Length: 166
Image 1 (tube, helix red, strand yellow):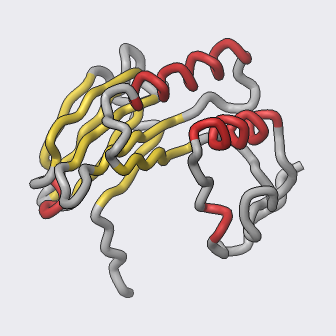
Image 2 (cartoon, rainbow, N blue to C red):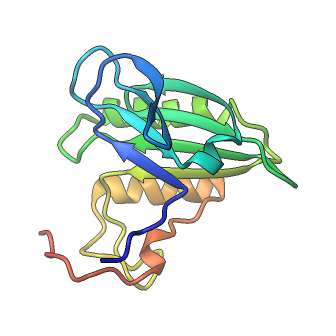
């Protein structure tokens, strides 16, 4: 079996308490899980990419931001774990405020990647390979991306067949 090579891997539902960084073999993990073992976000870096890790900041148990020193531009990574569709709207709004706070740690001229589990369905509105129909959380994500000039990229690539959610 061929091994997949990953330089950066975003993690959701880390479920550890507190914040920290640790070595896992040749990998480096940064994470924040808050005060309970319910949520948590983290980013795993391979040994080469970890050498470029300039700084990182836990925003909440749903949002972690890291800055990689790169040339010609630094790279800012915001890893997220969004509230599920049955969460209250106030919790969703707080989540988007936390992403905005994370963006505040980065400079406008840096390349910014927001990745993670948005718990949203965006269908084919964004790219040709979306799944299902747009839900309320998907509409909120699309609106946020439009305002911030971001692109939802996972709908541009064909994945394996999945069960259609109703």
